[in-house]
Every structure is written in C-alpha cells, then in structure tokens.
Length: 135
Image (cartoon, rainbow, N blue to C red; front, top):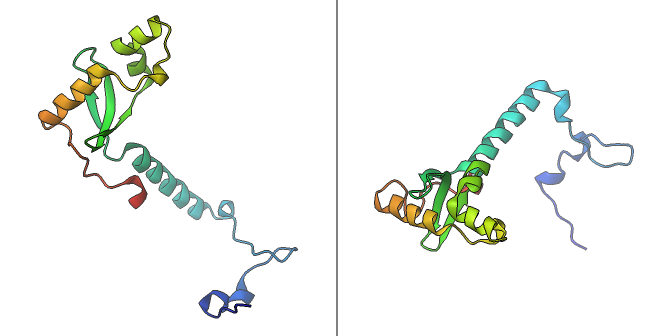
C-alpha cells in the first residue's frame, strides 16, 4: 500500500463535505462577482479559441470572404460563414451536380486566393499567433 504525505491532505478537515462524505465546492452561482468573472473569462477563452490568428481573405474569383490561418505548408484552416458557403461559385457547381460541399476538400479558386494573399504579405505563410490552448 502506498501512503502519500504532503500539503494535499494538510487541510482536509477544512474542506466542506456533503452527506455522503464527498468534498463540496462553493457553487459559482452563490457568488455574483465570481460568476461574472467566470463568464468574462469564458467569453475571452471562446474568442481566442475560435479566432486566434485567423485573417480575412477574399476570394479573387467570386469575392466571398472567409477567415484563414496557415498552420504550415500543407495545413490551412478556413472558417466559412453561411453566406460565403452559399455564394462560392465552386460550391454552387458541386451542389448543381448533385454533390455535397461538405465532402469537397476545398475550393480551388479560394486556395489560389490564399496563395496570392501569402505572396502579397496579407497572410502569414505560417501563423505566428499563439496556439489557442496556450492561454
């Protein structure tokens, strides 16, 4: 049997316990200030996770705008919004032929526009933005 000693069990007697002996923590809802801080931190984390390093790129062919982040030479993150997905000429052709746009790897016209944005210095070839998990 392993017996571990240390700070983790020093203040065991001060931890509130429920009827079944399980440790209880203070509910966030009982402290409005703490709840507001938690909401603000959660909103900040969400924003960073969803948008960290993304830059708007316009397709030079059909003029839709998407958010793009280059993670490496062979890895590009593209966030499409509903309007851009609906207006993309390539995706319209896929839909007209009975295909499903979700199964398309990407729009080749947009890929050309992303390469052009990198060549023009609008988009980094490899994003220097911190990883969303490194907050």
